[in-house]
Image 1 (tube, rainbow, N blue to C red):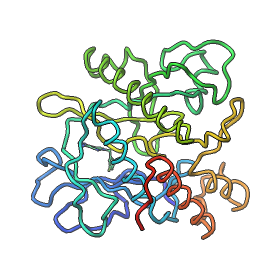
Image 2 (image 1 turned 30 degrees about the vertical axis):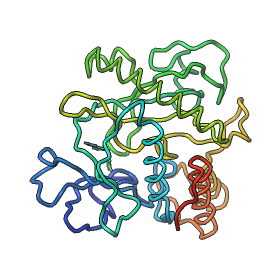
Image 3 (image 1 turned 90 degrees about the vertical axis):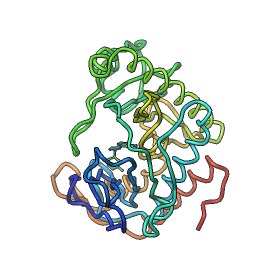
Length: 304
Ligand SMILES: N#Cc1c(N)ncnc1-c1cnn(Cc2cccc(F)c2)c1
Protein backbone atom coordinates (compact mmCIF):
# COMPACT_ATOMS: atom_id res chain seq x y z
CA UNK A 1 0.00 0.00 0.00
CA UNK A 2 1.17 3.49 -0.71
CA UNK A 3 0.25 6.95 0.30
CA UNK A 4 -0.64 8.17 -3.19
CA UNK A 5 1.79 10.31 -5.09
CA UNK A 6 1.24 11.69 -8.59
CA UNK A 7 4.35 10.16 -10.08
CA UNK A 8 5.13 6.85 -8.39
CA UNK A 9 2.29 5.09 -10.14
CA UNK A 10 1.65 1.72 -11.68
CA UNK A 11 0.27 3.34 -14.81
CA UNK A 12 0.73 1.03 -17.81
CA UNK A 13 2.83 2.16 -20.79
CA UNK A 14 0.37 2.68 -23.65
CA UNK A 15 1.35 2.95 -27.32
CA UNK A 16 0.64 6.41 -28.72
CA UNK A 17 0.14 7.96 -25.29
CA UNK A 18 2.38 9.59 -22.68
CA UNK A 19 1.55 9.13 -18.98
CA UNK A 20 1.40 12.57 -17.32
CA UNK A 21 -0.36 12.14 -13.98
CA UNK A 22 -1.81 9.59 -11.60
CA UNK A 23 -4.45 10.14 -8.96
CA UNK A 24 -5.10 7.56 -6.26
CA UNK A 25 -6.82 5.15 -8.61
CA UNK A 26 -6.77 6.83 -12.04
CA UNK A 27 -4.09 7.60 -14.60
CA UNK A 28 -4.06 10.43 -17.13
CA UNK A 29 -2.26 10.44 -20.49
CA UNK A 30 -1.74 12.84 -23.39
CA UNK A 31 -1.20 11.89 -27.03
CA UNK A 32 2.45 11.01 -27.70
CA UNK A 33 2.58 13.76 -30.33
CA UNK A 34 1.54 16.44 -27.81
CA UNK A 35 4.37 18.49 -26.27
CA UNK A 36 2.53 18.95 -22.96
CA UNK A 37 -0.93 18.80 -21.40
CA UNK A 38 -1.78 22.38 -22.38
CA UNK A 39 -1.22 21.69 -26.08
CA UNK A 40 -3.09 18.36 -26.11
CA UNK A 41 -6.56 18.52 -27.72
CA UNK A 42 -7.56 15.29 -25.95
CA UNK A 43 -6.61 13.19 -22.97
CA UNK A 44 -6.82 9.50 -22.13
CA UNK A 45 -8.35 9.00 -18.71
CA UNK A 46 -7.81 5.48 -17.36
CA UNK A 47 -9.62 4.00 -14.36
CA UNK A 48 -7.29 1.46 -12.72
CA UNK A 49 -8.34 -1.57 -10.66
CA UNK A 50 -6.72 0.04 -7.65
CA UNK A 51 -8.85 0.61 -4.56
CA UNK A 52 -8.37 3.17 -1.82
CA UNK A 53 -9.38 2.69 1.81
CA UNK A 54 -8.68 4.83 4.85
CA UNK A 55 -6.64 7.20 2.61
CA UNK A 56 -4.31 4.39 1.56
CA UNK A 57 -4.05 3.00 -1.95
CA UNK A 58 -4.02 -0.74 -1.27
CA UNK A 59 -1.47 -3.17 -2.71
CA UNK A 60 -4.24 -5.48 -3.89
CA UNK A 61 -6.21 -4.61 -6.98
CA UNK A 62 -9.88 -5.44 -7.50
CA UNK A 63 -10.22 -7.08 -10.95
CA UNK A 64 -12.80 -5.30 -13.19
CA UNK A 65 -13.21 -2.31 -10.84
CA UNK A 66 -11.88 0.07 -13.52
CA UNK A 67 -14.18 -1.36 -16.20
CA UNK A 68 -17.23 -1.19 -13.91
CA UNK A 69 -16.61 2.43 -12.94
CA UNK A 70 -15.95 3.47 -16.54
CA UNK A 71 -19.10 1.65 -17.68
CA UNK A 72 -21.09 3.41 -14.94
CA UNK A 73 -19.77 6.85 -15.91
CA UNK A 74 -20.72 6.22 -19.55
CA UNK A 75 -24.19 5.07 -18.53
CA UNK A 76 -24.75 8.16 -16.38
CA UNK A 77 -23.39 10.48 -19.11
CA UNK A 78 -26.03 8.99 -21.38
CA UNK A 79 -28.78 9.28 -18.74
CA UNK A 80 -27.90 12.98 -18.29
CA UNK A 81 -27.22 13.87 -21.93
CA UNK A 82 -30.43 15.91 -22.28
CA UNK A 83 -29.46 18.00 -19.24
CA UNK A 84 -25.74 18.53 -19.78
CA UNK A 85 -22.96 17.60 -22.19
CA UNK A 86 -19.78 15.80 -21.24
CA UNK A 87 -16.11 15.48 -22.18
CA UNK A 88 -16.16 12.02 -23.75
CA UNK A 89 -14.86 11.77 -27.31
CA UNK A 90 -14.34 8.02 -27.69
CA UNK A 91 -14.04 4.65 -25.99
CA UNK A 92 -11.63 3.43 -28.69
CA UNK A 93 -8.63 3.08 -26.40
CA UNK A 94 -5.49 0.89 -26.38
CA UNK A 95 -6.21 -2.82 -25.83
CA UNK A 96 -4.39 -2.81 -22.46
CA UNK A 97 -7.05 -0.50 -21.00
CA UNK A 98 -10.02 -1.59 -23.09
CA UNK A 99 -13.29 -0.82 -21.26
CA UNK A 100 -11.61 1.25 -18.55
CA UNK A 101 -10.20 4.13 -20.57
CA UNK A 102 -11.92 7.13 -22.09
CA UNK A 103 -10.57 9.57 -24.66
CA UNK A 104 -11.89 12.93 -23.51
CA UNK A 105 -11.72 16.54 -24.66
CA UNK A 106 -9.00 18.55 -22.98
CA UNK A 107 -11.23 21.05 -21.22
CA UNK A 108 -10.50 24.20 -19.26
CA UNK A 109 -11.34 22.75 -15.87
CA UNK A 110 -13.37 24.78 -13.39
CA UNK A 111 -11.23 24.53 -10.21
CA UNK A 112 -14.02 23.55 -7.83
CA UNK A 113 -14.93 20.14 -6.42
CA UNK A 114 -18.67 20.40 -7.01
CA UNK A 115 -20.21 18.32 -4.21
CA UNK A 116 -23.91 17.68 -3.67
CA UNK A 117 -25.17 16.09 -0.47
CA UNK A 118 -28.60 14.55 -0.10
CA UNK A 119 -27.72 12.86 3.20
CA UNK A 120 -25.67 14.17 6.12
CA UNK A 121 -22.46 12.20 6.63
CA UNK A 122 -18.65 12.39 6.39
CA UNK A 123 -17.10 15.85 6.46
CA UNK A 124 -20.55 17.41 6.05
CA UNK A 125 -21.72 15.82 9.30
CA UNK A 126 -18.47 16.80 11.04
CA UNK A 127 -18.84 20.45 9.94
CA UNK A 128 -22.53 20.41 10.96
CA UNK A 129 -21.72 19.05 14.43
CA UNK A 130 -19.02 21.71 14.87
CA UNK A 131 -20.90 24.72 13.49
CA UNK A 132 -24.52 23.86 12.72
CA UNK A 133 -23.79 24.45 9.03
CA UNK A 134 -21.94 23.02 6.06
CA UNK A 135 -20.06 25.28 3.62
CA UNK A 136 -21.89 28.26 5.08
CA UNK A 137 -25.29 26.62 4.63
CA UNK A 138 -27.10 26.58 7.98
CA UNK A 139 -29.05 23.38 8.61
CA UNK A 140 -31.93 22.68 11.04
CA UNK A 141 -30.89 21.71 14.59
CA UNK A 142 -31.08 18.11 15.76
CA UNK A 143 -29.92 16.33 12.62
CA UNK A 144 -28.05 13.04 12.97
CA UNK A 145 -25.81 10.72 10.94
CA UNK A 146 -27.26 9.87 7.52
CA UNK A 147 -30.36 12.06 7.94
CA UNK A 148 -31.90 13.05 4.58
CA UNK A 149 -31.29 16.61 3.42
CA UNK A 150 -34.18 17.80 1.28
CA UNK A 151 -33.53 19.63 -0.89
CA UNK A 152 -29.95 18.48 -1.34
CA UNK A 153 -27.24 21.02 -0.54
CA UNK A 154 -24.29 22.28 -2.59
CA UNK A 155 -21.12 21.86 -0.49
CA UNK A 156 -18.17 22.77 -2.69
CA UNK A 157 -14.54 22.09 -1.88
CA UNK A 158 -11.17 23.13 -3.17
CA UNK A 159 -8.92 20.34 -4.31
CA UNK A 160 -6.19 19.49 -1.84
CA UNK A 161 -2.77 18.20 -2.78
CA UNK A 162 -2.80 14.46 -3.33
CA UNK A 163 -2.99 12.70 0.02
CA UNK A 164 -4.78 15.59 1.76
CA UNK A 165 -8.53 15.94 2.12
CA UNK A 166 -10.35 18.52 0.01
CA UNK A 167 -11.26 21.68 1.94
CA UNK A 168 -14.96 22.53 2.23
CA UNK A 169 -15.55 26.13 1.16
CA UNK A 170 -18.55 28.49 1.03
CA UNK A 171 -20.45 29.53 -2.09
CA UNK A 172 -18.98 33.03 -1.64
CA UNK A 173 -15.47 31.58 -1.72
CA UNK A 174 -16.36 29.72 -4.93
CA UNK A 175 -17.59 33.03 -6.36
CA UNK A 176 -14.24 34.61 -5.53
CA UNK A 177 -12.45 31.79 -7.36
CA UNK A 178 -14.57 31.40 -10.52
CA UNK A 179 -16.82 34.47 -10.63
CA UNK A 180 -20.52 34.87 -9.83
CA UNK A 181 -21.99 33.55 -13.08
CA UNK A 182 -19.90 30.38 -13.17
CA UNK A 183 -20.39 29.76 -9.44
CA UNK A 184 -24.16 29.95 -9.82
CA UNK A 185 -24.12 27.72 -12.91
CA UNK A 186 -21.94 25.11 -11.19
CA UNK A 187 -24.19 25.12 -8.10
CA UNK A 188 -27.40 24.82 -10.12
CA UNK A 189 -26.04 22.11 -12.42
CA UNK A 190 -24.59 20.15 -9.47
CA UNK A 191 -27.89 20.11 -7.55
CA UNK A 192 -30.03 19.42 -10.62
CA UNK A 193 -27.88 16.52 -11.83
CA UNK A 194 -27.51 15.04 -8.33
CA UNK A 195 -31.25 15.18 -7.69
CA UNK A 196 -32.02 13.41 -10.95
CA UNK A 197 -29.36 10.77 -10.31
CA UNK A 198 -30.45 10.24 -6.69
CA UNK A 199 -34.02 9.56 -7.82
CA UNK A 200 -32.88 7.16 -10.56
CA UNK A 201 -30.60 5.27 -8.15
CA UNK A 202 -33.17 5.22 -5.34
CA UNK A 203 -35.86 3.61 -7.52
CA UNK A 204 -33.29 0.91 -8.29
CA UNK A 205 -32.45 0.31 -4.61
CA UNK A 206 -29.28 2.34 -4.18
CA UNK A 207 -29.01 5.48 -2.03
CA UNK A 208 -26.68 7.99 -3.68
CA UNK A 209 -25.84 9.83 -0.46
CA UNK A 210 -23.55 12.42 -2.03
CA UNK A 211 -21.39 12.93 -5.09
CA UNK A 212 -18.56 15.04 -6.46
CA UNK A 213 -18.59 16.44 -9.97
CA UNK A 214 -15.85 18.18 -11.89
CA UNK A 215 -16.86 20.52 -14.68
CA UNK A 216 -14.91 22.06 -17.54
CA UNK A 217 -15.66 24.47 -20.32
CA UNK A 218 -15.55 24.02 -24.07
CA UNK A 219 -13.84 26.71 -26.16
CA UNK A 220 -17.22 28.44 -26.58
CA UNK A 221 -17.67 28.60 -22.79
CA UNK A 222 -20.24 25.82 -22.53
CA UNK A 223 -19.98 24.01 -19.20
CA UNK A 224 -19.83 20.21 -19.51
CA UNK A 225 -19.30 17.30 -17.14
CA UNK A 226 -15.70 16.05 -16.87
CA UNK A 227 -13.94 13.41 -14.81
CA UNK A 228 -15.89 10.31 -13.71
CA UNK A 229 -19.51 10.79 -12.67
CA UNK A 230 -21.73 9.11 -10.12
CA UNK A 231 -19.44 6.18 -9.46
CA UNK A 232 -18.77 4.54 -6.07
CA UNK A 233 -15.41 6.35 -6.11
CA UNK A 234 -16.92 9.80 -6.71
CA UNK A 235 -20.02 9.19 -4.59
CA UNK A 236 -21.25 7.35 -1.49
CA UNK A 237 -23.35 4.34 -2.50
CA UNK A 238 -25.54 2.78 0.21
CA UNK A 239 -27.92 -0.17 -0.07
CA UNK A 240 -31.40 1.36 0.19
CA UNK A 241 -32.69 -1.81 1.88
CA UNK A 242 -30.39 -1.20 4.84
CA UNK A 243 -30.79 2.58 5.04
CA UNK A 244 -31.35 3.67 8.67
CA UNK A 245 -30.54 7.24 9.81
CA UNK A 246 -28.88 7.60 13.20
CA UNK A 247 -25.93 5.35 12.48
CA UNK A 248 -23.03 5.14 10.05
CA UNK A 249 -24.22 3.47 6.85
CA UNK A 250 -22.30 0.62 5.26
CA UNK A 251 -20.54 1.37 2.01
CA UNK A 252 -22.18 -0.60 -0.80
CA UNK A 253 -18.81 -1.36 -2.40
CA UNK A 254 -16.04 -0.88 0.15
CA UNK A 255 -17.48 -2.33 3.36
CA UNK A 256 -15.92 -5.81 3.00
CA UNK A 257 -12.48 -4.17 2.59
CA UNK A 258 -13.01 -1.77 5.49
CA UNK A 259 -14.30 -4.48 7.84
CA UNK A 260 -11.50 -6.93 7.03
CA UNK A 261 -8.84 -4.24 7.47
CA UNK A 262 -10.20 -3.07 10.82
CA UNK A 263 -11.36 -6.36 12.36
CA UNK A 264 -9.41 -9.32 10.93
CA UNK A 265 -6.21 -8.14 9.29
CA UNK A 266 -4.33 -7.20 12.45
CA UNK A 267 -3.55 -3.82 10.89
CA UNK A 268 -3.32 -0.85 13.26
CA UNK A 269 -5.10 1.93 11.39
CA UNK A 270 -3.85 4.57 13.85
CA UNK A 271 -0.24 3.68 13.11
CA UNK A 272 1.40 4.97 9.96
CA UNK A 273 2.07 1.47 8.72
CA UNK A 274 0.58 0.51 5.35
CA UNK A 275 -2.40 -1.88 5.40
CA UNK A 276 -1.73 -5.50 4.43
CA UNK A 277 -2.70 -7.13 1.14
CA UNK A 278 -6.32 -8.30 0.91
CA UNK A 279 -7.26 -12.01 1.01
CA UNK A 280 -8.69 -13.48 -2.18
CA UNK A 281 -12.17 -13.83 -0.65
CA UNK A 282 -12.38 -10.11 0.18
CA UNK A 283 -11.18 -9.26 -3.34
CA UNK A 284 -13.79 -11.47 -4.96
CA UNK A 285 -16.67 -10.28 -2.76
CA UNK A 286 -15.68 -6.67 -3.47
CA UNK A 287 -15.45 -7.33 -7.21
CA UNK A 288 -18.94 -8.83 -7.03
CA UNK A 289 -20.28 -5.71 -5.28
CA UNK A 290 -18.94 -3.46 -8.06
CA UNK A 291 -20.54 -5.65 -10.71
CA UNK A 292 -23.78 -5.79 -8.67
CA UNK A 293 -23.91 -1.98 -8.49
CA UNK A 294 -23.38 -1.75 -12.24
CA UNK A 295 -26.11 -4.31 -13.03
CA UNK A 296 -28.62 -2.88 -10.52
CA UNK A 297 -28.25 0.65 -11.88
CA UNK A 298 -27.93 0.04 -15.60
CA UNK A 299 -30.15 -3.04 -15.87
CA UNK A 300 -27.45 -4.46 -18.13
CA UNK A 301 -25.33 -7.57 -17.64
CA UNK A 302 -21.73 -6.58 -16.97
CA UNK A 303 -19.77 -7.82 -19.98
CA UNK A 304 -17.25 -10.59 -19.17
N1 LIG B 1 -11.46 14.38 -16.73
C1 LIG B 1 -10.89 15.29 -17.15
C2 LIG B 1 -10.17 16.41 -17.69
C3 LIG B 1 -10.57 16.98 -18.91
N2 LIG B 1 -11.61 16.45 -19.64
N3 LIG B 1 -9.91 18.04 -19.40
C4 LIG B 1 -8.86 18.58 -18.72
N4 LIG B 1 -8.43 18.06 -17.56
C5 LIG B 1 -9.05 17.00 -17.02
C6 LIG B 1 -8.53 16.49 -15.73
C7 LIG B 1 -7.30 16.85 -15.17
N5 LIG B 1 -7.16 16.16 -13.99
N6 LIG B 1 -8.28 15.44 -13.82
C8 LIG B 1 -8.50 14.55 -12.64
C9 LIG B 1 -7.65 13.31 -12.84
C10 LIG B 1 -6.51 13.16 -12.10
C11 LIG B 1 -5.74 12.00 -12.28
C12 LIG B 1 -6.09 11.03 -13.17
C13 LIG B 1 -7.23 11.22 -13.89
F1 LIG B 1 -7.59 10.29 -14.76
C14 LIG B 1 -8.03 12.36 -13.74
C15 LIG B 1 -9.12 15.62 -14.84
